[in-house]
Length: 224
Ligand code: G3P
Image 1 (spheres, rainbow, N blue to C red):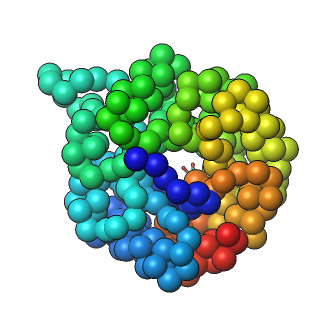
Image 2: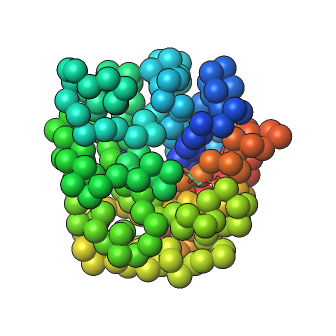
């Protein structure tokens, strides 16, 4: 499996606005925007909605996290095999709101590769981005935590962190693609991200909390 770029990845987190039917509506909005604009979108539904939503949309679906464990007696954890069976093509790992140990990240990336699942590893700064790139995921997503949910776009407020991440990753492992996220909410933010060398964006509140999520997605797609 692979995820085409440039891409808009929507992580719906655990917001009230993205639970159940509202999560499906967000996934369908992604599907419509891709159909209307040709811009690749992907969605990370709430974990409890993953299989249900993946069955109903054509856009790529990602898990918000995958744990290190094997199928079997491990209550409450999410195993990669189940993520695949649910219809996801990959997983976010190490999100700022769900940090993982380096050895866990390495193990899950490697296991995902064996299963044909795409790993997107989130990072918070350049050194962590370097470490993540060295592990060989398909993508890293640089997200300064202080801008997450702020409405202040990383691509405009901290362009240097995106540029540094891109240049660090390309030195270490040129095959790894770089996304950026935190505060991205408009097409201008996306345009700025791509101009800095990012191959897409990872975002949440700008769409999930928008009065009209489809209109927000269309605006974002306009930046590509
Ligand atoms: O996973 C996306 C993320 O952490 C950015 O959140 O709300 O700033 O777009 P937001």
